[in-house]
Length: 464
Image 1 (cartoon, rainbow, N blue to C red):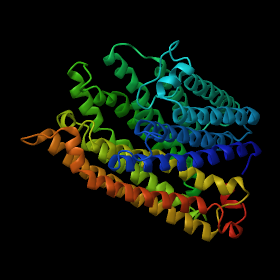
Image 2 (cartoon, rainbow, N blue to C red):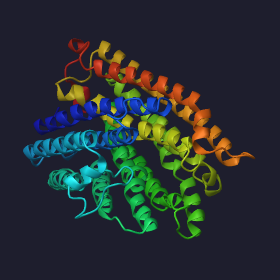
Image 3 (tube, rainbow, N blue to C red):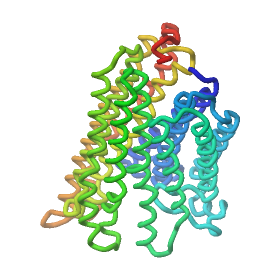
Image 4 (tube, one colour):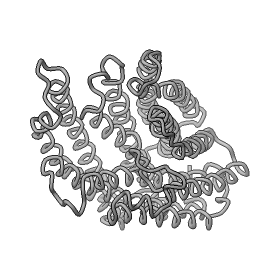
């Protein structure tokens, strides 16, 4: 660790991992409720488990991004963070707000939660992924403003690099796009139109910039390749992301009442969206092949390479499978969508947070890397989680294809629930692989505690 203020990243990383475990546990509850409908009912109904599962995902990824930014920006700017104390206050505000929100989901009916949190004065609740109470949304805005104020002043007063420029551009975009969560028109078409400005332009727009910057930072540190080379790749990825992602939002507009030209625009630009992810694959492997040093943190290298591959498969390939309008006509809202969502989120964002965590955590504790035993455990965690996510995706893909045929394309289409009963076998397989994923996550967490004493001390590889 070069700067003392980088230590503020620690609580963000710890909270992110705790919420990650909670997300997976509620995902397993949901998966079981698909086949055992009254499991934990009425204590944890399906809609509540789903809200906690998806909201925990969003919050812990944001926690991870914030921790990564607080670690990365001081080192890139070559100066201490503007206000470490503000960063810690921001963390506790965010954590308490997230905790109270989850308690609200679990303890009172959603309609009651809306009344208790003043939703009637500024209606924002009731929409998928944006279920957070209005007060929580306001808290998220305040947290984002605090983060951006702290990082921007650090950036403006220090060295300016392509990595921090792209990272801050992505974080500012993240904050600005979230403001559309407060736009809640009565008209359903307009509501969904602006809703996608948050959901799509986060995960298929500005989040990709954050991902690219974090990946570039780690690759600079573990490969020693000249920054000029990495910067050029980063700018190419950013350009491809913005060109394809912004207009590619149109693939969500096919069937919500907007003009037909979105079928053409959405299809064309969505077909280009795999390109930035393919560029990330070329980028990561090219940098590792051209490396000037063998960094002792082999686990971080594995995570970096795995991120690029899995992001390309999940967000790129599986996204393209059902993005063209004539195909999406049949696939929209099926388990094929869920298969894409699971692998895309894991490959693009979960793995990049674990990549920076794998690199930064030993540095924050005065070590170049974890000990050999720790890294072996961590890599076991990598493979267990990654392989199980591949199988989760394949099982959901099979379920989705069968669902499409039985429910939408056959000569005698079945009702929704009848089709669901026939694909239950794949839900059981998905649940089993979900358990394996949890084992992989616990193995990954164990690597932080086992074999640490053999870790190499902070040395020249960390200072480069």
